Length: 369
Image (cartoon, rainbow, N blue to C red; front, side, top):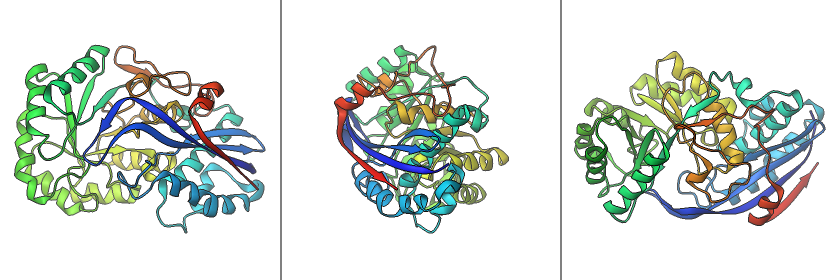
């Protein structure tokens, strides 16, 4: 296909409540979408970059600039020889900027599969038509506030609770949730690199709560540290920020640093690399699950298709639209019996609702060949 033009749409979508992690607190989902026009039709994708370089080195303004200055000129120059599968090789020379690359690759994959009448789920080799949904619970101001949120999510039917933790907000909240809801609750924690090698004894205290996993406890580049921690504690160590490619996933597994892997497509450069990571994990009997970046329906739809692949054996952060938003920008995803349905229409399987998109749009910019 031939890439004709790309529209970068910046949006500010209010969250229902502030979402606090060990590195930030946000009440507005500031994001941009990539909307591509090709000679075969259009495609959509949501960039996973935050407004600040806190989760990773990327942030959305820089990602937009990289797309405009470097990615698009290379893709426009390919003429009608472009496919989504050729994006990564074409920009391989560019170091990093995986979220920017993922946004363009995904929007082109959407256009390509829409034209072919194939859904993301079918393209990925999905084996489920709905996926079990977990929910991520941010750091709260009090234990009472935490319990109100956890109780509410469990009443909605979520099958797994993930608690964000940091030094000073770890043992007591985890203990309270476990004691309140018992051992049958699927419970895990996410540190977002908030700890160091000096905190191993503190993290070992969490072993008594029979957690599914502890996610990204220490610095993302410290593979050896994670391997040492995995040997020191009983709770399985899951890597998130560390895993940026299938090669890194393979190394982490071989070192014993990753007993479980969280795959976030935006973090690893797109869904094609995500599929490779899935295959590496499956070949090594490592469970994977799908994380999220507070996506609206455009990003959530593609994540659900990925989470329906066979190696995704744990509930992910593929929650309903209502977890974060009063109003989604597509038809909302709904939680039914603890599961969310995987879109089956061609491409990502959903479309933006123009009047809602307009309500939250901050700016639109077209880049043409």
